[in-house]
Amino acid sequence: MKHYTIKQVNALEYQILQKFLYEALFQPDPKNLFPFSIVETAELNKYIDKFGQLIGDYAIVSYDGENPIGLVWMRLVEGYGHVDSKTPELNISILSPYRGKEIGRTLLQTMFQLLKDKDYRQVLLSEQKANRALALYLALGFDIYAEDEETFTMIYSLINND
Picture 1: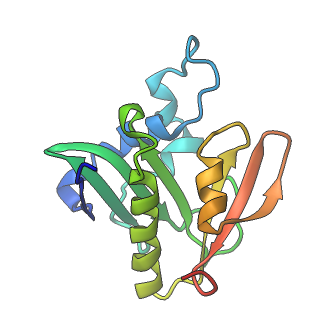
Picture 2 (picture 1 turned 180 degrees about the horizontal axis):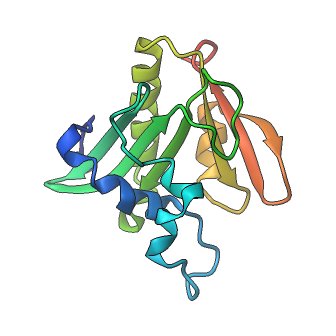
Picture 3 (picture 1 turned 45 degrees about the vertical axis):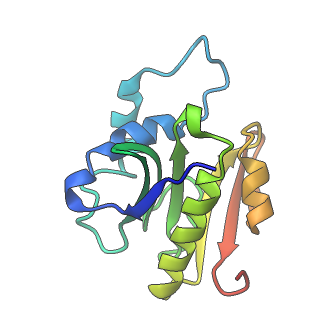
């Protein structure tokens, strides 16, 4: 198995968040992709705008050589599945050629440890029901907190999962 470098994102690397936010979007029709400009809408931009300047902004990146291939980041934001002011919302994105190689699992587990070290109790993740990554989230111990027709909002307890 190939070895990938995983590290916390530094301030000079924050510009990669826009690319990975776009990659994180579930796009059910590969022939009709969202325009890249969608990440500039207020609904999505709040997950990356001025990242690193707010308390609770953390990001971990995976590299293949010098190329970023995966990113998990969290922010205390009133986002899609907001629970409370102490529960950060998690986002994760793995570039397509690297999916299914345990990179997402490793990034999430690394982020969970960072959040435990920062005394967070839980983290939130919203995901489309049709996204195949859902199986990974459930296997890691995320619990479904709420749902609508297309989306699950899930919570991972940083206290009860080791």
